[in-house]
Length: 301
Image (cartoon, rainbow, N blue to C red; front, side, top):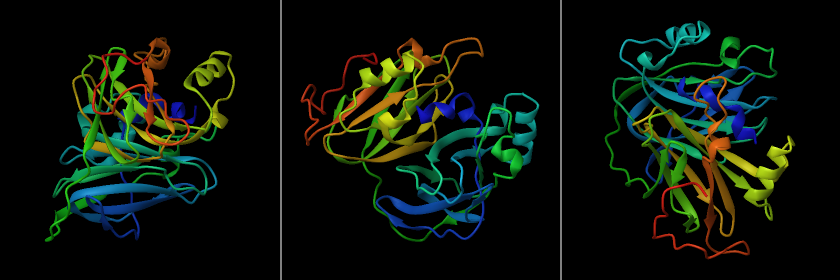
């Protein structure tokens, strides 16, 4: 699954720089951040307030947009130096916002929305590598910073209602069925370990059981998905600063999973049962197995 390639270090996070201007959206402003081989094209500054980020990969290789709020006085270069030294960066980051993915020449399917804090700095970073032995993209210059100014003097609509996904050690609690349309997913980690939630759309006719069977056999599952939207990750007891916004299509099925490892020798959490599926009502794939207004019991299955 493509979403697995982001995995463990999604808690390192950052932000970029160029000529992208904010435009009004459903809950504030939407900013498109461009990615090239190997640099970000993002505004040097943005106004405070509700902002949704979309990622446009103009390069020839797959990239990610990884966003975090830096602690006051911390520079993104210090975060990268700490990362290169193999040391934890949590003390340098106020909190993770979220991660978006895009294949070469494509835009991210979803957006990450957050309330930008006035007077603060956000970092953007791409931690992907083109191969196992290649440099990380941030070591090739794919990182930057956005400075946040004062709030715009205008009234904006409230953000859409949120759908909360709760992570525990090691399962998800969430609504199994949702109505079509735009959903803003918030992740809350009630466990003691670091967890993430990734969201990806299954190809039509593909089941979660088929994906699991192919993965267990060591096969490539990329063709079984129509797209991955991004991820939210946070340490135990926390909630990321951003929400993952997805336009969910009628009758389609979306997979959620956690690919974090507790340590290098531990299995990914998905292997411990931390996965599930969300069905969207309407269309040919509707199962009607659960009403969207009734939250499920704890667990992932």
